[in-house]
Image 1 (cartoon, helix red, strand yellow):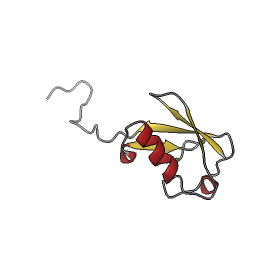
Image 2 (spheres, one colour):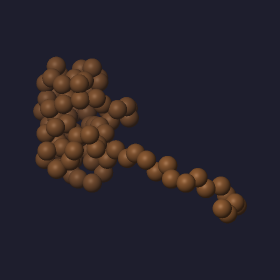
Image 3 (cartoon, one colour):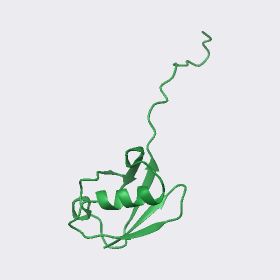
Length: 88
C-alpha cells in the first residue's frame, strides 16, 4: 500500500509498504532521510493515535493512500509553577 508521511517541517513524502511488515522500516527510512532520531519523533495515524514501530499497517488500520503525521516528540516544560497574581 502507499502511505503518505506529512511533517510540520518538510514536504510530504510517500512510501510503498507491505501490509504485513512492521512500520519500523518506514519510520527508520523516514528518519534516516531527514536526519532524525526515531526516538525523538512521534508518528500518528489518521485518527491521531500514536503508531508504534512494532505495528504493521494492518494492525494500525491503514489503507492505501492514507496519510500519517510525524511530530517532534517534546517532553518536559515542567519548570517552576506560576500562579496568577502571586509574586514569589
